[in-house]
Length: 257
Image (tube, rainbow, N blue to C red):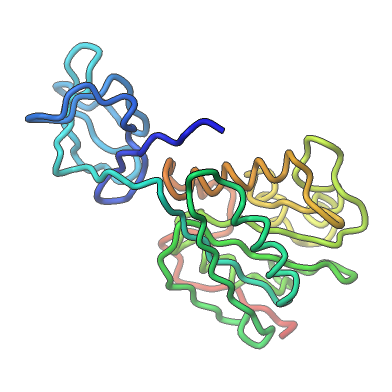
């Protein structure tokens, strides 16, 4: 696996702007040949597309950015918060995840959930990525009005600015090779009054399998950790319920718990 290039992130919102491999000069300003998540404003001024913060200016093909506007993020470690109602399943998943990145230590913090905690759940812990695991044991009740994880997912999505991945195991049939989710998830979305799980699935934020993840799915989890920890993009809230948005004041209510 190719070694990761340390990213330069916006100091204000931690969105990835560039990386060490594209740094040409570093005094008096950082000069990059390639940047991402940056907007060119009037007079060639450059701002972060995530938060709008001024970063510097563009001269020809080069980007001259203020050192005070950027942070260099170490690629030595990534932190993941894993939540599940099942202790043993959580231990198995944690073992798989810690081996996904070479030369990068993935620290997985295991958090055992209780169903009684899920109603009105408020997430407030800084980390790179949140993983929510659910073991299917019959009918799936995940999101929206009757979903167990309504409040949990909405709160995590808001606080983490979209850096969340849902892992569903023990489903009836694993997805075909090259797919992250089974048709069961989209059936829930269309016919089971749980449209949000379908939207999250289309966004690449749901992975499900029967007994073990495919190599394609493991690669997706690996890339999700890399993007969340090092190469962050601005959060996407399109099509999601209002409760998932940063400005949300109302929380989903779960009537089953």
